[in-house]
Image 1 (cartoon, rainbow, N blue to C red):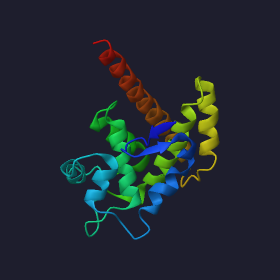
Image 2 (image 1 turned 90 degrees about the horizontal axis):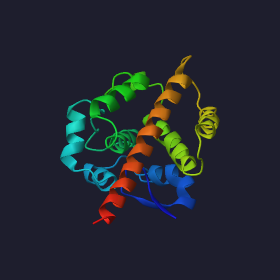
Image 3 (image 1 turned 45 degrees about the vertical axis):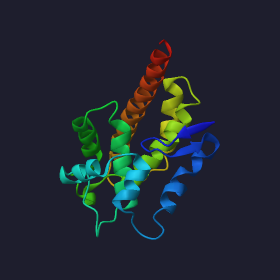
Image 4 (image 1 turned 135 degrees about the horizontal axis):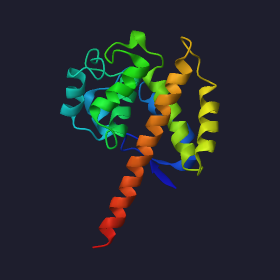
Length: 183
Protein backbone atom coordinates (compact mmCIF):
# COMPACT_ATOMS: atom_id res chain seq x y z
CA UNK A 1 0.00 0.00 0.00
CA UNK A 2 1.39 3.42 -0.98
CA UNK A 3 1.70 6.26 1.47
CA UNK A 4 3.15 9.75 1.26
CA UNK A 5 5.78 10.52 3.88
CA UNK A 6 4.07 13.11 6.14
CA UNK A 7 5.10 16.67 5.27
CA UNK A 8 6.68 15.64 1.97
CA UNK A 9 5.64 14.71 -1.54
CA UNK A 10 7.65 11.47 -1.41
CA UNK A 11 5.59 8.31 -1.95
CA UNK A 12 6.67 5.20 -0.08
CA UNK A 13 5.31 1.70 0.28
CA UNK A 14 3.90 1.25 3.80
CA UNK A 15 6.00 -1.90 4.15
CA UNK A 16 9.10 0.30 3.74
CA UNK A 17 8.00 3.06 6.14
CA UNK A 18 10.40 1.85 8.82
CA UNK A 19 13.25 2.91 6.53
CA UNK A 20 12.15 6.54 6.15
CA UNK A 21 14.83 7.86 8.55
CA UNK A 22 17.56 6.14 6.53
CA UNK A 23 16.06 7.36 3.23
CA UNK A 24 16.01 10.99 4.34
CA UNK A 25 19.38 10.79 6.11
CA UNK A 26 21.07 9.33 3.03
CA UNK A 27 20.33 12.54 1.12
CA UNK A 28 22.80 14.28 3.45
CA UNK A 29 25.78 11.96 2.97
CA UNK A 30 27.55 14.61 0.88
CA UNK A 31 26.72 17.39 3.37
CA UNK A 32 23.72 19.67 3.30
CA UNK A 33 21.13 20.12 0.58
CA UNK A 34 20.19 23.22 -1.38
CA UNK A 35 16.92 25.12 -1.32
CA UNK A 36 15.73 23.54 -4.59
CA UNK A 37 16.16 20.08 -3.09
CA UNK A 38 14.25 21.06 0.06
CA UNK A 39 11.51 22.42 -2.19
CA UNK A 40 11.42 19.20 -4.23
CA UNK A 41 11.15 17.05 -1.09
CA UNK A 42 8.44 19.13 0.60
CA UNK A 43 6.51 20.48 -2.37
CA UNK A 44 6.88 23.97 -0.89
CA UNK A 45 7.80 26.99 -2.98
CA UNK A 46 11.35 28.22 -2.29
CA UNK A 47 10.04 31.64 -1.21
CA UNK A 48 7.92 29.98 1.50
CA UNK A 49 10.96 28.25 2.96
CA UNK A 50 13.00 31.47 2.78
CA UNK A 51 10.14 33.33 4.48
CA UNK A 52 10.13 30.80 7.33
CA UNK A 53 13.88 31.35 7.78
CA UNK A 54 13.41 35.15 7.77
CA UNK A 55 10.60 34.84 10.33
CA UNK A 56 12.87 32.81 12.62
CA UNK A 57 11.00 29.49 12.36
CA UNK A 58 14.37 27.81 11.75
CA UNK A 59 18.01 28.80 11.64
CA UNK A 60 19.39 30.04 8.32
CA UNK A 61 21.21 27.61 6.04
CA UNK A 62 24.99 27.66 6.18
CA UNK A 63 26.57 28.42 2.80
CA UNK A 64 23.12 27.96 1.22
CA UNK A 65 22.93 24.36 2.45
CA UNK A 66 20.27 22.96 4.78
CA UNK A 67 20.97 20.26 7.36
CA UNK A 68 18.85 17.20 8.10
CA UNK A 69 17.60 18.93 11.24
CA UNK A 70 16.50 22.00 9.26
CA UNK A 71 14.80 19.81 6.66
CA UNK A 72 12.93 17.94 9.39
CA UNK A 73 11.82 21.26 10.94
CA UNK A 74 10.51 22.40 7.54
CA UNK A 75 8.78 19.05 6.97
CA UNK A 76 7.20 19.20 10.44
CA UNK A 77 5.86 22.70 9.87
CA UNK A 78 4.59 21.72 6.43
CA UNK A 79 2.91 18.60 7.84
CA UNK A 80 1.14 20.48 10.64
CA UNK A 81 0.04 23.60 8.75
CA UNK A 82 -3.19 22.08 7.33
CA UNK A 83 -4.45 21.59 10.90
CA UNK A 84 -2.69 24.27 12.97
CA UNK A 85 -1.81 27.93 12.44
CA UNK A 86 1.85 28.86 12.02
CA UNK A 87 1.69 30.56 15.43
CA UNK A 88 0.41 27.35 17.04
CA UNK A 89 3.08 25.28 15.30
CA UNK A 90 5.80 27.66 16.47
CA UNK A 91 4.39 27.58 20.00
CA UNK A 92 4.43 23.79 19.91
CA UNK A 93 8.05 23.71 18.75
CA UNK A 94 9.07 26.40 21.24
CA UNK A 95 7.52 24.33 24.03
CA UNK A 96 10.22 21.71 23.53
CA UNK A 97 12.99 23.66 21.82
CA UNK A 98 12.93 27.20 23.13
CA UNK A 99 14.17 29.69 20.55
CA UNK A 100 13.39 28.31 17.09
CA UNK A 101 16.47 29.75 15.42
CA UNK A 102 18.87 28.49 18.13
CA UNK A 103 19.45 24.73 18.36
CA UNK A 104 21.59 24.94 21.52
CA UNK A 105 18.52 25.00 23.81
CA UNK A 106 16.65 22.08 22.17
CA UNK A 107 15.23 19.25 24.29
CA UNK A 108 15.15 17.08 21.17
CA UNK A 109 16.79 17.33 17.78
CA UNK A 110 14.25 18.13 15.03
CA UNK A 111 15.18 15.04 13.05
CA UNK A 112 14.81 12.82 16.12
CA UNK A 113 11.38 14.36 16.84
CA UNK A 114 10.24 13.87 13.25
CA UNK A 115 11.48 10.28 13.08
CA UNK A 116 9.71 9.46 16.37
CA UNK A 117 6.58 10.98 14.84
CA UNK A 118 6.97 8.84 11.71
CA UNK A 119 7.01 5.71 13.85
CA UNK A 120 3.83 6.87 15.58
CA UNK A 121 2.14 7.78 12.28
CA UNK A 122 2.85 4.35 10.81
CA UNK A 123 1.54 2.69 13.95
CA UNK A 124 -1.50 5.01 14.05
CA UNK A 125 -2.79 3.46 10.85
CA UNK A 126 -2.85 0.05 12.55
CA UNK A 127 -4.64 0.95 15.80
CA UNK A 128 -8.14 2.11 16.57
CA UNK A 129 -8.04 3.36 20.15
CA UNK A 130 -6.25 5.93 22.28
CA UNK A 131 -5.03 3.32 24.78
CA UNK A 132 -3.02 1.60 22.05
CA UNK A 133 -1.59 4.93 20.90
CA UNK A 134 -0.53 5.79 24.46
CA UNK A 135 1.16 2.42 24.92
CA UNK A 136 3.03 2.80 21.66
CA UNK A 137 3.95 6.42 22.44
CA UNK A 138 5.43 5.27 25.75
CA UNK A 139 7.34 2.55 23.94
CA UNK A 140 8.73 5.03 21.39
CA UNK A 141 9.66 7.50 24.13
CA UNK A 142 11.46 4.83 26.14
CA UNK A 143 14.30 5.15 23.60
CA UNK A 144 14.52 8.93 24.10
CA UNK A 145 17.23 10.13 26.49
CA UNK A 146 16.16 13.18 28.47
CA UNK A 147 18.72 16.00 28.42
CA UNK A 148 16.93 17.50 31.46
CA UNK A 149 14.31 16.10 33.86
CA UNK A 150 10.78 16.45 32.46
CA UNK A 151 11.88 16.55 28.82
CA UNK A 152 10.27 13.17 28.02
CA UNK A 153 6.89 14.40 29.25
CA UNK A 154 7.16 17.59 27.17
CA UNK A 155 8.20 15.68 24.04
CA UNK A 156 5.33 13.24 24.62
CA UNK A 157 2.81 16.09 24.77
CA UNK A 158 4.15 17.54 21.52
CA UNK A 159 4.09 14.16 19.77
CA UNK A 160 0.45 13.64 20.84
CA UNK A 161 -0.48 17.02 19.37
CA UNK A 162 1.49 16.35 16.18
CA UNK A 163 -0.21 12.98 15.71
CA UNK A 164 -3.66 14.43 16.35
CA UNK A 165 -3.10 17.37 13.97
CA UNK A 166 -1.72 15.11 11.25
CA UNK A 167 -4.58 12.62 11.66
CA UNK A 168 -7.08 15.49 11.45
CA UNK A 169 -5.53 16.71 8.21
CA UNK A 170 -5.66 13.17 6.80
CA UNK A 171 -9.37 12.90 7.69
CA UNK A 172 -9.97 16.27 6.05
CA UNK A 173 -8.44 14.97 2.81
CA UNK A 174 -10.71 11.91 2.91
CA UNK A 175 -13.76 14.10 3.54
CA UNK A 176 -12.82 16.41 0.65
CA UNK A 177 -12.39 13.44 -1.68
CA UNK A 178 -15.78 12.05 -0.63
CA UNK A 179 -17.46 15.43 -1.11
CA UNK A 180 -15.90 15.81 -4.57
CA UNK A 181 -17.20 12.39 -5.56
CA UNK A 182 -20.78 13.59 -4.92
CA UNK A 183 -20.68 15.78 -8.00
